Amino acid sequence: MGSTRRKFTPEYKAEAVQFVVTSGRPIAETARSLGIVEGTLGNWVNKARDNGDFKERPLELSERAELERLRKENQQVKMERDFLKKAAAFFASQNQ
Image (tube, rainbow, N blue to C red):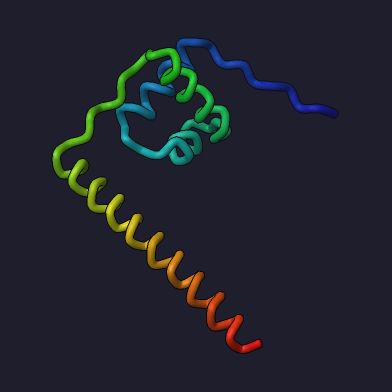
């Protein structure tokens, strides 16, 4: 026996999306609390973003500073990783 699909009204979908946007909680956590599959709620949120139904709040100054710091740190970590890969390959070739 197959299970029946639940149908949600456009109003319910809009309210769920608005809840995600205003609460600041992750989609997965919000979906669990509403009893909705995470992927379904994620699709609703993505569709609302694509349609321009809501605007995300702009980043605050402290958030922008943190984002910039994390981008620089990420770039540094990638450079170190690439160097270590090359060093490992070099030393591996020396042992053969």
